[in-house]
Image (tube, rainbow, N blue to C red; front, side, top):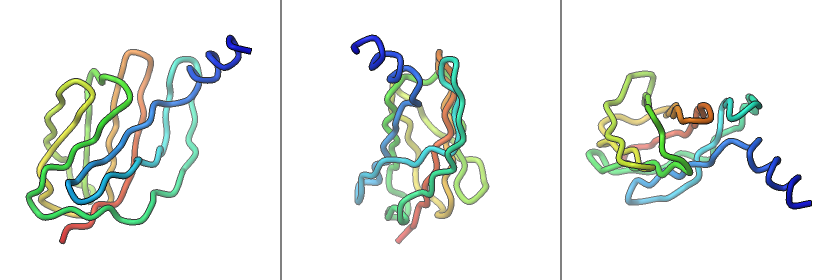
Length: 116
């Protein structure tokens, strides 16, 4: 039973949480390859996440990425990565995609960022 649980845990992509200082929400997963498994659940992201213009937006990953690429409203965003945390200043709102690459694979997370 423990071996099955461990195998299933390795087949699931790591989660991530978005923190805008106003709200803290889990990110939806758009697609992933982790270990020997891949998936594209096309999960609908939750309602828009509020953030103040210029606020520090932080994503806390469940793993330490080797590289991270982010875009808001289709435009690339320069991010700072420190361990499992990825952050940037909220300058624009819109659809957020964040792709993090790690030792076991990659995960693309999605959300909608709403500036106030």
